[in-house]
Image (cartoon, rainbow, N blue to C red; front, side, top):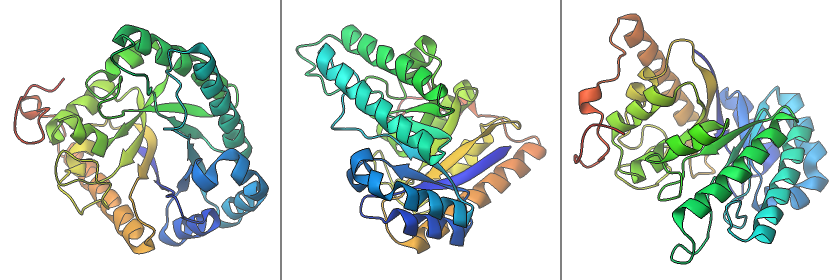
Amino acid sequence: MNVDIGFVTQLGMGLPDAVAIAADHGYDYVEVMLDGAGARDRLAPRRDELRTALSDHGVDCTVHLPFGSIDPGSPFDAVRSGAVAELEAHLDLASALGATKATVHPTTDAWAPAHDDATVGDAIVESVRHLDGYAADRDVELVAENIPKGRFDTNRIDELLDRTDVSMCLDTGHARVDGRDDGGIAALIDAHADRISHFHLNDVRGASDEHLPVGAGFVDFERLFRALPDDWTGTLSAEVFTHDAGYLGHSLDRIEESLSAAEADRADGSGAVDGANAGRDADGGEEGGE
């Protein structure tokens, strides 16, 4: 496999400091959170400082587009078009930073009782299609992240992938919230490895979105990596809720150990996904994957 490993910057983390941490620990890139102090209007005065830090340390970057306050799936045209315009502006910033990928949340805050599922899904698909093309024109790959309990969580992400050409970002903690155990996540990877080009790796102890350091919970990352084909090329971001560089260094070590073990297993011919145990219930419920 041809893999680059980075981490997602967290709110309150100085971006030049994050780049230095990445370089010190041997990360390939940082995934810059373009929200809060990283939003385009607030980052603009410091954009050159960030670019200089990336260049001086030899660290690449991807970005995470803003979410929550932005609704690309709104059933109201003016709201949706404004959200798309704001995301376009952040993609322009991503391109200016030299980012190779941009993570987007394909979600909506539409009031469910008032707006039917199909209408909301169509609105999200329309926005994702447009943004995917807009990003590609700027040499940025858009990756759509699975959002738990959202319109396109891991149990419905097939529809988004079928209706668009967008790549996927698989968030391991979000998949656990959807009820997938290690087998269920591995089955999803096996089914969509050709579309998954980016991961958000974070550990959990149950069906919750804890964003623990890799190795601090119960996710079997080696098993997940075994589900990827030998020729897979992509990026792995540790998305850990910490400012502590030690935990980021530990997460990198554990990711590299899991990758090496998975590659060794495949070389021994033991890397197939165990479909019989590909359950969707992280607490031991329904089996059979998707």
